[in-house]
Image 1 (cartoon, one colour):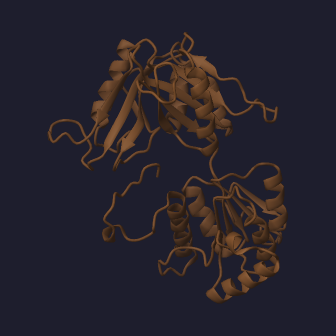
Image 2: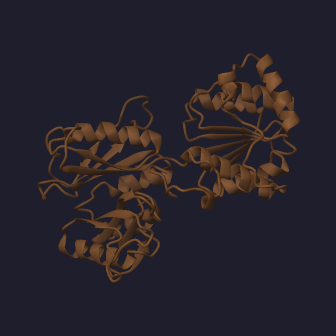
Length: 385
């Protein structure tokens, strides 16, 4: 829904009713991830996509019907073998939930949109399947904490009239906050009254977490290319260097911010402020001991960081390891370091090196090998990737 939120909020503010189809679950190969949405506007216009072309026409009609009738629907698309039936040619399965969206069916949409625009974490939990058809389509908006009040969770707000049945509200709120903290969207199963070991109730939790962070430490030419590809991949990129002559916004137009400070002092402040999480990646590009040893000594001891890479030749890497061991780091802590950084792509230019680094980050995030797909005998898309 993130990619269509502006148009969706605009129609909502105008008092229109639109139809929205959202991918809530995938199995096997699928061109889009859970949360991908298509919205059919009040005059038939369309924004967004759910499949890259395979079932777009079918979801368009499904969403338009949901807006016209006011009735949501959950439809599964796969490869039925019928060449004329809508389905995925890649052999996967796509579950799409279509529902009407208006000020009546989604009263808190404007609040969700404001949170998304401001980068505040918010999740929308939608009941997509339940034995009671009247409950299907109800939404629960969940936030992590009250603005300006640390560590106090914000109360969830229920959109669409009736209260959620039984223990559903409590169970969904707790699970949605866990998914939101991890930046994941997922379809959850419960019993009809919210029992965690049960069936009959399906709830899709779509998380709108702030963009993950990429900290590029060292304002060298390679850093500009890494910042560019990091921004392209959806990271909020920060470039940090203690040298004001090099750390300038003009040199790094793709970075969200450029900080002049010693990298280890900046990283310490961000850690103390709670601005780092498991999606944060750190790329140390200085290959200068006075910069990289202090910051790596700190980074490798921060459990919340998702990836830590350092540039340098193999000789530089071995010398760096000696210095880090002398600084007291253990072999377990050193095992978190990706150095020399990147995958073996044979690149030399800053742009080619940035692709190599980005490829390693993607592989590490998904638990993939980084090998050529043609040489592997396994599904292309892994569960949760």
